[in-house]
Length: 276
Ligand code: AMP
Image 1 (cartoon, rainbow, N blue to C red):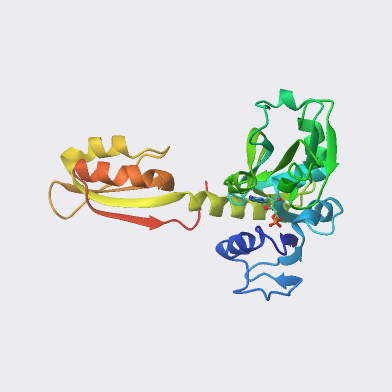
Image 2: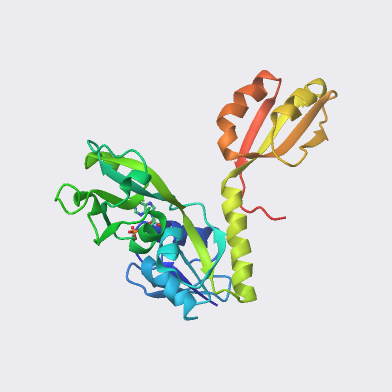
């Protein structure tokens, strides 16, 4: 099976790390390598531009590929999203110069908009709209008098602010995705499942703690999640161990609350895979 992986840019390293965490990638694919065989599975990774991944998948050159959802939508390729990968988060936003009176998407009607996403901008902005197709440094277009507004990818918003721009609306939320053809090969679906198990595990921690039996109820009500925690007897009479999977994002809030409820010997460990 062949998978296309971004060869450069901000999706390259996290994509190779995902292959590594899935037990597949070699230690370090050389900087100039165009392809590398994966360890432990009959998978070959082809390093190509993130922009080209939808075409490679659509044309059947590879069985699946990793790229940004924004790129997939902009290309309009006939591909299927197999898994969301949880990195490369950004949003496609419409923005105007800070001093502009424009406050809503509606008010962009008739405006000149610079973007390197002409398809998405054409689809998601109100008609009529005049699109100026630019590649790179889109944020400069209003200052150069080339456009009244821009449509571009934003993550923290600091590039917009640095260039004296203000966001008006979010057109699309994006992150890295695994895509395959509309009718994917079973191996590509299997790989999507492996990636999902890694992505889900990254968002979870395995929590272990000891507590007096009479604190179990309070502790179990604090530990969120769909699964009931395991409660195991300890050698010390009246004491139990509680094990549970918790969302990584809740840990900050949870630990002091658990201590206050009587928990001791609290251990939190990373999870490698989550299945089923
Ligand atoms: P690059 O190859 O570095 O231009 O990365 C392109 C892809 O990275 C985009 O298509 C997005 O999917 C993703 N991305 C994540 N955050 C950002 C951002 N702040 N600006 C541009 N691209 C981003």
